[in-house]
Image (tube, rainbow, N blue to C red):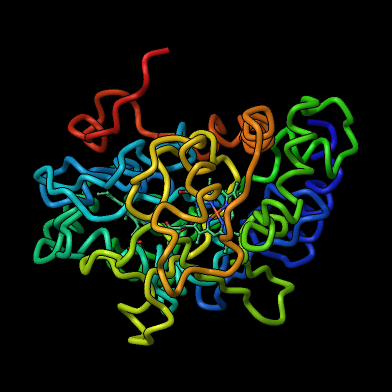
Length: 374
Ligand code: HEC
Ligand code: HEC
């Protein structure tokens, strides 16, 4: 952990020069720029801590059973292990819950909506969305704000995070949740130690061979899963323009009417079956895969690409999904490479884990995805 000390010290100094009483220290190495932060929601340690408590608090849902963490579980890189999410009253959704690692860097959030560009705004969807209902809070706003007001932690935490606007309401809740999610940064996998810190033995020989295959023209993976987050969706505080990538990988022909892809928003025929390229960081712990969770494991994903897509004839399929022939050993190597992107420190980071004590009303009735037997 020594290598974090120097950048962290530099950040603390930078914060001090900014003269903020409560500087937020980005958990970032020098080679990674921070995510963009909206001018009307600056980061502070108090706000991130408040957002963390709200993220794990099931009292934000109508009946006190569903928190953000119910579908975004840290141990699974903030996914839920289900094909499709299950919300309040066991209502089944249509889509797979994406991980939240590095969510602050994605210029377009969710699977197929180019307009969902803000974490502050996105938080309203699970809270108040009715298609499907996730937390079921619509119409219960005042009751929920009142519930939070009487909590002793929140009585101090809202004023500390928002001195000019200290009440629990939509303004403060969505901003604190967004600030917490910007703090969910994962760039310390064995592959990072190998690639950016020069630790030659941080990954296995199989993973090194898999890296070469991943970046090889026979497989073409890197065209879409590119750059530091292994996706063509990226915006940092230094980006002039956001990168946004949606592709049709030939999963269905035609795509089901309920989940048609980007075309649902744009109406353009060429957007049929296009979904946002997911980041592959921590992908080994986020099964099942794809926007509808229809592929159970990484081997299945590789089989989908080997066959030029599960439904290879879709007219809008991306030209890069052309199929390939590979030996079993090569597929195993690619999977070893994908596994080297698992950041154990991120999955267990105490700074982003459940802050509520056992038995507390925030979590006593909270549903969580079942953990695999160890
Ligand atoms: C019932 C399960 C469920 C709950 C509860 C839930 N989410 Fe989600 N979340 C999802 C699903 C499913 C998606 C994908 C939605 C889509 O693509 O339209 C998603 C997407 C997201 C995204 C976009 C991530 C990305 O990479 O694009 C963010 C951010 C997010 N959720 C944050 C939250 C927050 C904050 C809360 C609590 C206020 C929350 N979620 C509660 C299931 C859930
Ligand atoms: C043309 C762009 C493109 C190429 C090339 C591509 N992918 Fe993908 N990948 C995507 C998109 C888009 C999705 C999501 C598709 C969906 O859900 O409908 C995806 C999904 C995945 C997933 C599932 C991730 C998750 O969280 O559900 C994995 C794993 C994956 N790709 C690995 C690979 C590998 C390995 C290769 C090379 C053999 C590859 N991809 C080539 C665009 C691409």
